Length: 371
Image 1 (cartoon, rainbow, N blue to C red):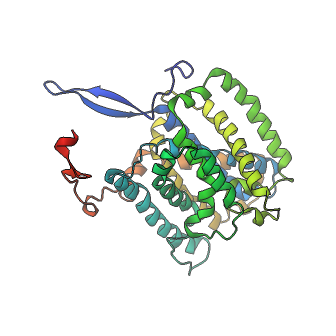
Image 2 (spheres, rainbow, N blue to C red):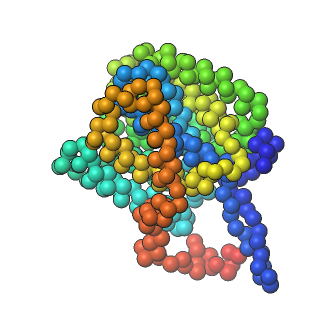
Image 3 (cartoon, rainbow, N blue to C red):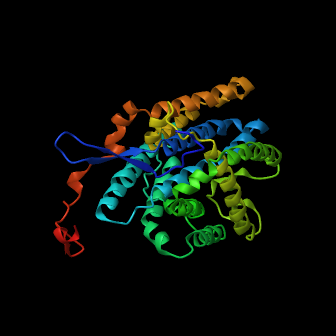
């Protein structure tokens, strides 16, 4: 498939197969472009976490860290919103939300709490399902975003409303840590944008002119990041604190919300423009990015416990490159099929026992009539 000639037609393509004597059966095939995008984004997430201990004494690493944090989670969230367009709060979708988001959240929130009691040396750290620990904030946010999808699908100006909510969140330091609501609200516009996108929008950013333009734009953003290291707090890109936390006037919050949103969108477009549309060796790994995301955190926490960054070699240029490659290899391994088979019981449990069987009558209308 030519990346420039053939547009992205849907999140999943539909193929038709038939056995002799039987009617055709429609099966869904995953779209390579989106799987490639998710895999590359999750690799950048893991690399960013690996760079965290190296930021203090390397301006170059901090600049690269800032550059990547400007777009890797926005890209991941936009794609998540795009794949949530069909969420209609029907029983089947609610079941999928519970088994694919709520159960992993409960399991990994508990697991991270128990693990970090050892890795962080905090033996009495309480288990709290209302205060997401480490990487689990994304599952809590995804649960809230997806539940509100029907609202965003019916209001007239979803993106401006979401941006207004995000801007107001930066003015509200009183928002507590429950379900990491501050970060949930500030990242909300990216999810809503994903809900608003169509296949042709992704095709637009993958035109060869956009790809060529993405090179100088990305290079300029990286240079700007290097310049901004001593002049700007990169924590703005975490979207987890109100403006008051940064010691600036409140009106900075709404301005930074709009500015960072525009900056992130440009860099997300640059990133997506260079994502391959054809099947690659890593395409199948795109189906396991949530596994890589949640599991690599244990590797990071264990590494911090053993203070790998306390040695001199990782802080050398060669060491920084090695750390980056190791992070990519580890998260890649955690997205593979064998790992997914082991952890599927907690990441994608069937849980048929927990749900009522489908009723022959839906919304008061017999199934035979609905057909």
